[in-house]
Length: 419
Image (cartoon, rainbow, N blue to C red):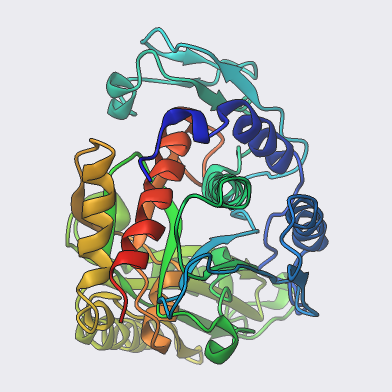
């Protein structure tokens, strides 16, 4: 079937997106619960209700807050099952409560003034705006995240499901849906069993702009550096106090800044990024993320931290520093080599919609990277997110509409490429 614009209801898609972003579902990195925040369960429950309302009878929210659903095949014979994934949580790096979305119809160009304290999205710092003139944009008031990462993905997949249920003339094999929790804090696949997914191939909808097919991600580790000093009343601290806060500050100051930092790298460059520091005189803890497209580099980065710890210990007698690293995810490129067709059919789907596509890299990770490592090839597709993890975040409705149309093409292409 030829996909037409009439299949996708842009107003319905917009209304859902606006509804989703007003639910605070920010992940909590300090929580010991799964999911880490109650808002993720609240949002998942809403999605579950909407799936049931559209006629997806097997939709469920499991005990871990994950939302699962299947749109059954409507053709005879065996077809590969295709999974589509987005995550329920938003980043904890900026406020996520009391989001006040504002819709800008037919964006005229230029800087976008937000409502709060002179905040603005500028063309200087967001050159992508030049390609969005005339599009419908959704922005915040400048105080919070929007949540387009990844509620643009949620809304797009929900619109896909609505279209497939309402139009049985769109021929497709089994379409699996999975909405995950805590992706932003590295736990998106923690409660997933691959056999329950029961899919041949998958796609995450968690990317910026339109037309990007992310086939490679960073490999990632978390580093935790613990500084153990000695606390004593400062009035008698001479030759007795060992200040862990001062030691942590020295450690951070000695990290590379003109290279191997997010502020100084792009493209395929890796980095070490200190992002959380807390503690007191007796003990302080520093967290860093280690990122590179070459997994072997992560070993080098860890050794750099160990060497730096020895240097700081030598400058502050009596101080102890412990460096621990935790594996997070690995570059999806190796896993995608098992199924080149996953990317090739995505390219064909974009071409059928007349949208130029690009094979690209993502300087981050997705649930798809982890699922690819687990054995399910899963590239990441664009869905209209911009300025993510920032109070200047915005999303493009037109890109979400186009992404939905691409997914409709994609499920038909997989139906025609039976295994």
